[in-house]
Amino acid sequence: MDKPELVAAIQAVEQLDSPDASELLEVYADFLQAAGDPRGTLAALQLRNIDGGKAADAWLAEHREQILGPVAKLGRGPVVYEHWTAGWITELSVDASPRHRERAPDLEVMLRLPACACLRRLDAHWQHWPDAPDLPCRASLRQLAIAAKSSDPLDFGELPRLQSLTLHGCPSSLDIVAPNLRWLGFARTQLGPIGELFDAGCTVERVSIEIPWVLIDPGDLAELLRHPFLATLRELELSMEEWPYDDVLITPAPPDSVIEAIVEAAALRQLEFRKFSGLGCWPEQRNRVLAAFASAPGQTYV
Image 1 (cartoon, helix red, strand yellow):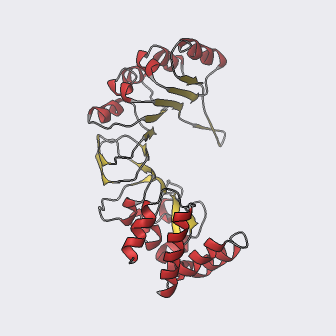
Image 2 (cartoon, rainbow, N blue to C red):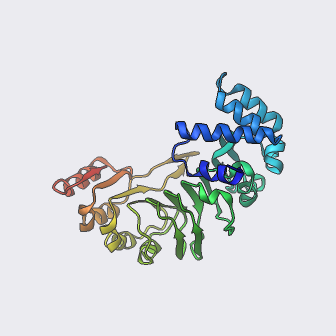
Image 3 (tube, helix red, strand yellow):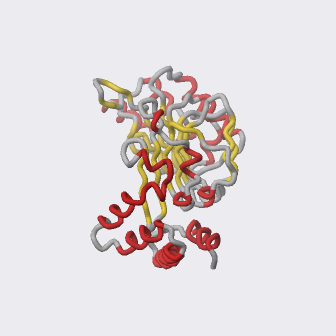
C-alpha cells in the first residue's frame, strides 16, 4: 500500500479511535518516519501517549515551522486552533473575525498543508469556502462551518463524507454533492432565502435555524414554517441569535410574533423532534408552545 492509498484509507475510517484506524495510523507514522518527515515522530508520540501528550506537544512546538510552514508563526490560540490525531490535524478552527482578520491565515493555504488531508471538522465561519476542487481534505470532511455571501451562489462541489454543514449567511443558491449530508444549519442569516435553497432540491433530515434578532420579519418566519421542505425533515431546531450586552453575549427572549409563527405552523406537528430550547422563551411563551404541541406525535423541547 503506497502513500495515496494509505491516506484514502484513513480518510474513509469513520472512527479514528477504532482498532482498524489505529493500525492504519501506525503504518502511516512508520511511513513518515522512514521518509524523514517530522510528522512521523509526532504521530508516533501521539499514538503512544505515554505521558498525557506532553512529549508530543513538545515535539510539535519544536518542529512547528517544518510541519505548518508559514502558518506556524501564528501559534495556537484565538486565531488558529488545531486538534491533532496521530500526526494529522483532525479538527481546525480559524477565526478571521474583524478583530483577528489581519492575523488569520489564508484558508486555502491552510487546507493544502499535508497535515490537513484527513481533516474531519472545520470551523471557519468568518471565511469563504475555497474554489479549489483538488483540496485533499474534501474526501475526509465530516463537519463544516463556513461563511456564505447572501447575494452569491455557493458551489461546494463534491464532499462525499460531509455529514453536517453550517452556513453563516445564506447564499442565493447552494450546489453540493454530499450524499451523507444529514444536518444543515443557518446562522447570521435572513430567513427569506432559506426556503429557496430547499426549492433547489437540498434534502436533509435535520435543520437548525438561528433566528436573527435584528430586522426580523415575522412574515418571513411564518412563510418559512409553511414551506413544503418541512415534510421531508425529521428534526427542526430554532434558536435566537445571541446579542452583545455589557460585553457579554445573551439570548434575548423572542418577540411574541415568533411564538405565534411557531404555534400556527401545522407542518411542525409532523416532525419527530421539535427543538426550541435555544429560543430563550419567557415561561408563558414556553407554556404556550408546549400546549400547542401537546397532542402532536414526536417530541418537543422548549
